[in-house]
Length: 111
Image 1: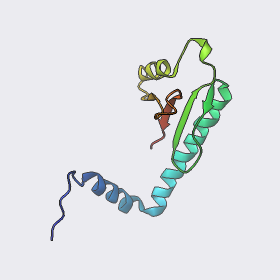
Image 2 (image 1 turned 30 degrees about the horizontal axis):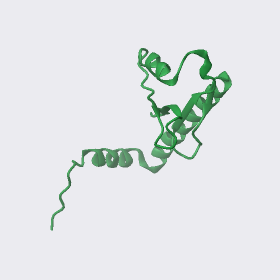
Image 3 (image 1 turned 135 degrees about the vertical axis):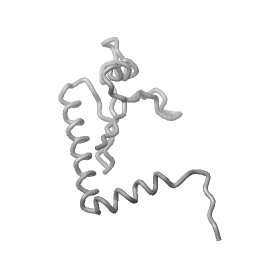
């Protein structure tokens, strides 16, 4: 009996190694820290008054946001391009059909 897959298992093995090395508590601490950093970023973006936060704090360290006022002559694509000059990869894209008028930026907080 054999199993064949179209992709290698190296990523799964890497994750398994991390779980064994860090343990459940270690992994939990890392994820709690990532979520805390995502909440911090959310607060900072809200404090500027220029951004609308679109994501909810649902356990995944992701912050999705868009510009509140598009009349200032900038859009999310321009912000994404500008951040890339400083080494930050913050993609800007439109949502799925029926919501394609929503343009947003997304940050995935990682260790």
